[in-house]
Amino acid sequence: MASRVNTSFTLIPKQKCRRSNHHSSYFCNTLDSDPQLLSTLGNFKVLPLEILHIILRYLSVKDIGMLSMVSKTVSQHIINYISTSSGSRRLLLQNFHDLDLPGTKEETALLEHYRALGLLFKRCTLLLPTKERLKYIHKILSETLTAGWDELECHRVYNFLCELTNLSRKMQTVVCNKPGSARKLELRVRLFCRNVLLDHWTHRSDSAFWLTRILKPWPMVNQARLLYIIFGPTSPHDGQVIWQEMIEGPTDESSLKGLANAIKLLYDTGAKGWTADDVISLVDELSVVPREWLLENNARLLILSGNNICFTFMASKAVNGRAVELARLVVFLALVCEKELYCMDWTVRMMQKVCKVFSTAAERKSFLQSIANAFACVTMEMLQPVMSGDRDDDDRGFLNLFHLLHAQANFHKEVLYLTMNAISS
Image (cartoon, rainbow, N blue to C red):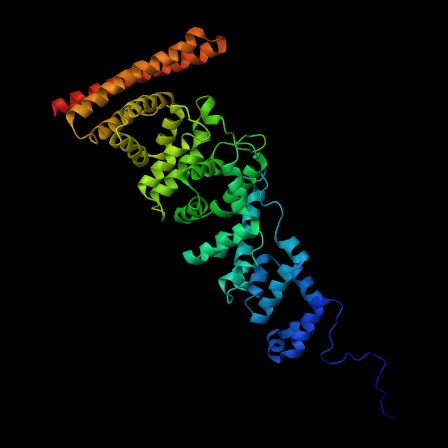
């Protein structure tokens, strides 16, 4: 007896795909029209686009990046997945600028996620022109994405980000308005520049490149304002920029460290577009943002910026005939060294080095006399609040006066040691 064949099952028409939405229709039409694309999908050719997206949700970012290198067709479908709302929500995490993350395991995991994401973008868009690649960056720029790109391409990246985020307009608002009048916008500019463009680079030259892109389009006065917004002191409560920190009283090292590191970055790396004079002019302009700083804070910034920048700054004043200003600066360099327990020998040797900038012996003698006069003038200035202030002011004034007198004594002691060693040798 002949066996009976079960014909109750439903036959699946060949090359018949679901057309439930636009993406599925695109996927199906592409396969129907191009047999070569069909073959490069391998076993994925029988899957509707929705199923492929479900599979991608179960893969890590690193695995998706590996999958994107299988073929050009697979890479294109992964790009389409990233562009969907579900793919964007999954891959572009929303807590990138969270102020509570620094120094935690969550921050490390977040940075690793974006490094993997940058590598994924690079692999997916490897065969595309730079302009086309940038369209898939959306809100995130990772150092992994632009690693190995030449400067012209990185210029395009910066211009693209400025256009995408209105960064230039936001910067114009914060540098042209009164300091502190747009505190939330200042914070947004700071976080974007630090978290997206400047921090996390392995090589300092890369950070210098991006900092140059941020500052150079603006006049010097605006460069100084931007530098303060990005690297200046912030409130521990809300992270907003503190504009009066350098004006109202002596500050500490932590408030100036970011600014000093940024200045060293531009000076020490030999960043393109910056000369030594440019950096010194920037330091000079920074010292009056938003108004003239206390000279003690200016001296502390120079010390933190390093020997080369400090000497070049002082030598510039000597060359330009500003010996009286220079003498007062030497006094406050000595004061900071006394307060911070730095070696006073450093201040004396810096003064000795600057003396050689003056062309004649008469100018050098006049400069040394100006330092002696500056010590006397600063002492009188510090004594006045003590004589006429309240109890709290008296305590702070006496402490400053105490440090100044010790600084003067130690400074002249080091000068005497230097003189005696020169005579004996």
